[in-house]
Image 1 (cartoon, rainbow, N blue to C red):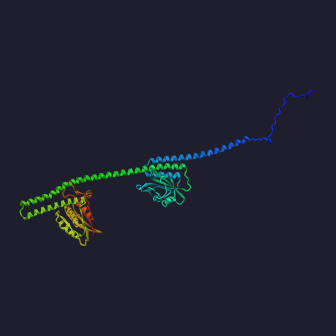
Image 2: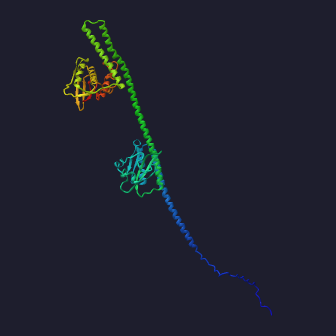
Image 3: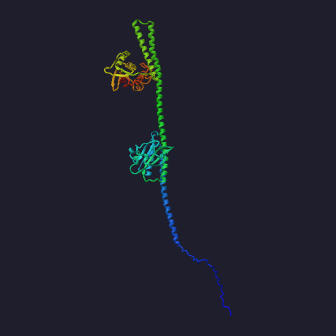
Length: 480
C-alpha cells in the first residue's frame, strides 16, 4: 500500500515547551490616557503661570512707578536744597516732602541752635504754632537717658520722650517715628512724624528717607556754615567799624594831646613869668610905696596859686591813670562845706556885672563824701562858670531826691554846643578848643571831677541848649 497523500506546503515548527517553575503570569494591559486631557492640564498650568507673571509684573510696575515718583520728588528736593543757604527754607522743604509722601498726621522738624546747646523746633504740621514752638529739646541728645540711637531712623518708644512730645503724639493712637539729619557725626537736626500704629515701611520708602536724610543734613550743615560765616563777616565788619572809630578817637586824642602840651606850656609859663617878674620888681625896688609893693606881692602870690592849681591837675590826672588816686568818703555836713567854698569862690576873678548866688542850706542832711575832694570839684565848677560868664550870674542850687542830693552850678555864660558836649569830659578837651582861645585852662578839670565823683559814688553831667544859652553842671552825692 501506498503512503497517504502529504500537503505540499511547509509544516509549522512546534515551539519547544519550557517547564514552568510556578503559576503562569498573565500580562496586564495599561489603559491609554486620552491625548486631549494632557493638553488641557498643560494649558491650565501655563495659564496659572501667566496669571502669576501678570500679578508680579503689575506689582513691579506699581513699585517702579512709586520709585520713579520718589526719585522725581527727591531730585526736585535736591535742586531746591542746593539752591538755598537758609536753614529755615531747608526745614520747610523737608517737612512738605515728609507730609506729602508719607501722609503723616503731625510732624515737627528741629534744628541745632543756641550755639549747639539745644534743638529748637523750626516748623510743624498738624499742630498750631504755639503748640509746636514750645517743644524745645536738649543737645546733643534730645532724649537723654534713653536707648535711642541718634543717627538711626526708628520708632520712638513712649517712655523715651515722657510728656515733652505729648502734643505731637496726640490721643489718636499714633506712633512717633524719628528721622535724624546727621553729618560728620553731628546731629544737625531731626524730624519726628506721628504715623498710624499699623504703618509698615516699604523698602523704597526707607531708601527715600535715607536719601532725604543725607540731602537735608548736608543742606543744614551748609546753612550752618553760611550762617556762621555771615556772623563772622558781620562781626568783622563791626570790629572794622569799631577799629576805625577807635583810630579816629586816637587821632583826635593825639591832636588834643599835642594841643594840650602847647597850651600847658603856655599856661605854666604865664604865671611863672608873672611870679618872676613881680619878684624882680620888688627885689630891684621898682615901686613907689609900700602899697604898690604889697600889690606886686599879691599878684605874685595869685600867680603862684594859679601855677599850683595847674600842677595839681596834672598830678591828679597822673594818679587817676595809674590807679593811685584815693578818696575817703565820710559823713559830712554840706552846709559847712559850702561855707568853706564860698569865700574862695568869691575871690575868683570875674566880670564886673556877674553876680554869684548861694542857696539856703537850712535842713540839708549830711552827705557821704570825701570833703576835700568834693570841695575841689565845686571850686573847679565855680571857677569854670565864672571864667566863661561875661554877664549875668552864676548860681549854686541844691535839690533833694530820694537817697541823694544834687548840687547845680547854673551860669548864663557862653554855653556849650551839642557837638562839644559829647567830648567835654574827655582828656585835654575844652568846649571852644583851638590855640587862639579867649579862655585859658588845660582841659583837665572836668575829667578829674568826673573821676572823683564816680569814686565817691556820685555823678556829674552837663546840659546846655547851645552856644550863648548858658550851661548847667550837675553833681549828685549820696545822703549819709
